[in-house]
Length: 236
Image (cartoon, rainbow, N blue to C red; front, side, top):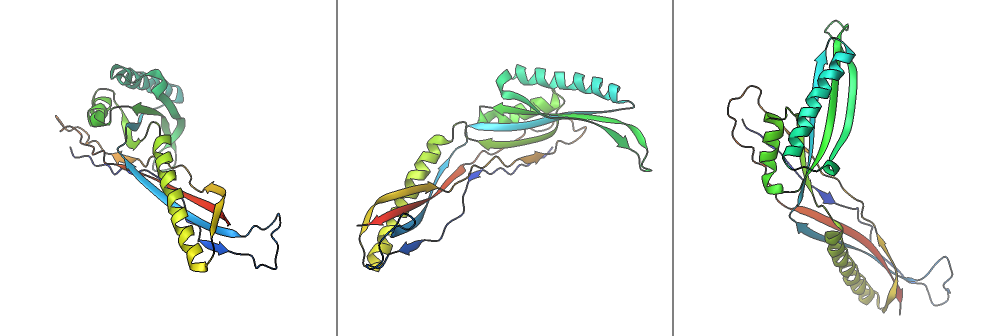
């Protein structure tokens, strides 16, 4: 069995062009316009992820909707029991989707009903996520398996990146002020232009009927946490 997964995650934002605004001496500042230097700054830190986000599912195809539901309930119970036996807490197990739909034959006639359930799991030891997935699939009966990585508490990394971004904005603003022959004053406003990202999941395709498959290998790598800010400086 060969499994492959591509995993990336980033907290990203677009850049705003850097602008120097200086009011002529004859034009007084007003509440709608404050002369100053406006600069954007970018900061990035790389961190090893500490949490794996697993999406696993089960499904059933039966002649009637009620049969499909009953069979699905049995499969889901088996999968959840396996997840708990691996040490996954109740708070880290969430149903993310549940569907019961007609299944159509090639001539567009209903030939049964397909029920499916998707379950989201948090796995807190990224070094053993491959073994966990193997257990969920081989003993828990999981199908439609996806995995992504993230940070359990990204605020620390975001704060580091934000500090770098503000320093970057100050450096740019200082360079622009010197080039324009003006003096940089105090900070008027700082705006965080970043928006949160989410894990990008890679599909794991387990070979059907393969005997004694090799353990699944999932490299963890690092995540880039990026922050973009705009800093507005007054003129001294």
